[in-house]
Length: 262
Image 1: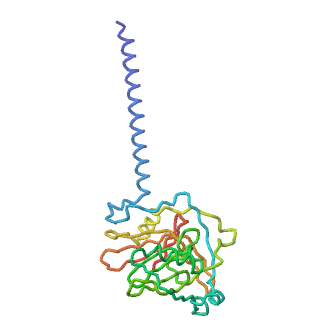
Image 2: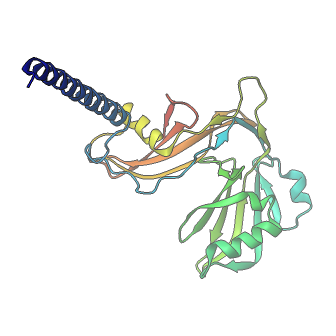
Image 3: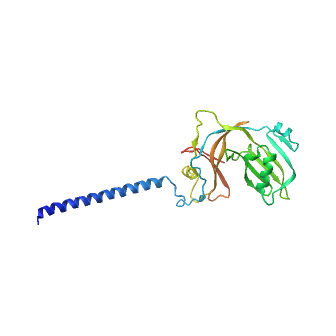
């Protein structure tokens, strides 16, 4: 046997094995760095002991723009409706429902039918809240609610017989995307990103609970007649040690969103 040749072969094989082990080790280290980096971009709410909804709205692919609108003057509209009167210089329409509409079995369907036939752009409103004395609907634009806005709301009064007997309506009209070079359609950030924005800005802390999140339009400019509406995430939070729910509006089209506290 040629021991010199065998020794050279053994050294060569040994070097190859060492190189392979080194490559595998480097790949493993790089992979761990990538996983750590990906993990650092997402808050572990369970570890932070912060509760968030299990099912979050899916807005993948959705684009939005700033919207402008004006308060509707119902004066002329009321003149053609015997049951409708106006208040606040025509900005509020007040109507009587005769005969009253029973809402004891299905509050939404019966009122929706009435709204479509008898109320100004009634099909553009969606249910927001309900209690024993009142049903509240919010005006919408492109399917999204105009949130927390007393100029775009429809409220039905419910009597003791569980009947809708009257309503008060406000509306924004001439709703359209704002004109301007800086109002291009932009992608909406995810619901989770919006919640994380609260966390990174220290509005959300240990033992807090996010109870509800929804996407809509929130008024960032409210002049006498004109409003500018911005797509926003409305996030409701129960803070640890407090019995009150706080509402936050998170800009929905920025990676570093502005946050409004209500």
